[in-house]
Amino acid sequence: MVREPRQERSRTTRRRLLTAAVECLAEHGWTNTTVALVAERAGVSRGAAQHHFPTREDLVVATVEFLAEEQIAEVRSRAETLPRGRRRALAVARMLLNLYAGPKFRAALHLWVAASTDEALRSVLAPLEARVGRESHRVAVELLGVDESRPGVRETVQATLDLARGLGLANLLSDDSKRRERLVRQWATVLEPIVEENVGDQARSGT
Amino acid sequence: MVREPRQERSRTTRRRLLTAAVECLAEHGWTNTTVALVAERAGVSRGAAQHHFPTREDLVVATVEFLAEEQIAEVRSRAETLPRGRRRALAVARMLLNLYAGPKFRAALHLWVAASTDEALRSVLAPLEARVGRESHRVAVELLGVDESRPGVRETVQATLDLARGLGLANLLSDDSKRRERLVRQWATVLEPIVEENVGDQARSGT
Image 1: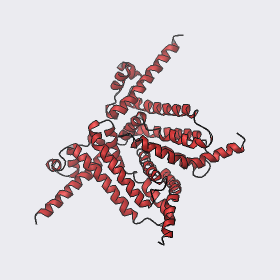
Image 2: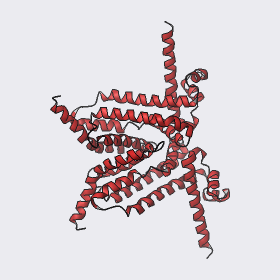
Image 3: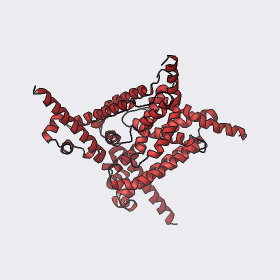
Image 4: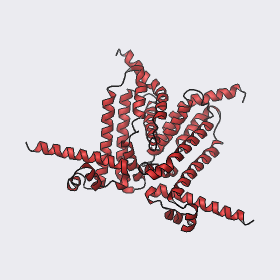
């Protein structure tokens, strides 16, 4: 009976630490994000923080996984509200191309860029990046409901996510949302043919 | 008679400093790129370096301008060799989507990301970024030879450059060139209609 609450408390502490880590990264960058600073921000003792994340590397790995999980959960929950049929391409384009416009992308970007000149950090992040990339791709395919065995579909989905990351960069130093919305509308015309093929399939199968 | 060579020497020194600054940024990041380190790498005395760039901000502005000029000159010189007609879309897609795959983009990225959490650096870089962005766009339009007054053309050119920057990110921690080449081929099919319209115009006007 005692075990459950303690586990739960531990999960809550961990979550507070990870949320604080994302905020620290987005605001202060990798160089200034230490376990001690994160603990302070989370309102958690240094000892408790060190129990969860003995090293800065442990904290980084958990943070990247946390960021990816949060984002995928957010996408999945918002996916429920997307329209079906012809209007779906525009709605999905808007959702995906706005995916990296916020502070979570900025936090991840600080890590990626630091890893590009830090061998130890790179060896931790590179395999994670590959895994997170595959997972994001899988979710985008699900969301669009497209058939990847058709020529060009896989590459179009990949291009959507790479474009979204490029737009994340463009939003780093200034508010790029107006221009981004115009690109969303144009991008919907690129997605429409592959989404509509699928709409056709659904129509043929009677849904 | 004495003046010319001295000016030329000064230009050579400046160029060596800027080349060294790009290398330092790409290898060590913004935090470690000081005027002193750049001078050492360039084989230039600290005094001479400080004469050209009194502050780190002066060095940053000149470096970003230098990166942009170098890239645009490179694109223009390679543009001469691109095929005309139907094969042009693929050639331009390959050239533009590979634009940010190298150490120059990494150098610029270090600056952008540092600026996102450093107000002083941001105030220097944000207007420069806007100018460089407009210039890159102009060159891409030239290269494609497209008519921006047609609906969607402007956004497709912008998406090409944003996608290129997203691909630059994807190439940061690992070699992404094989996947990128598949995206290039797919992207050519997006560019073909707007390039071919133009080919049609040329045919109509008799060239």
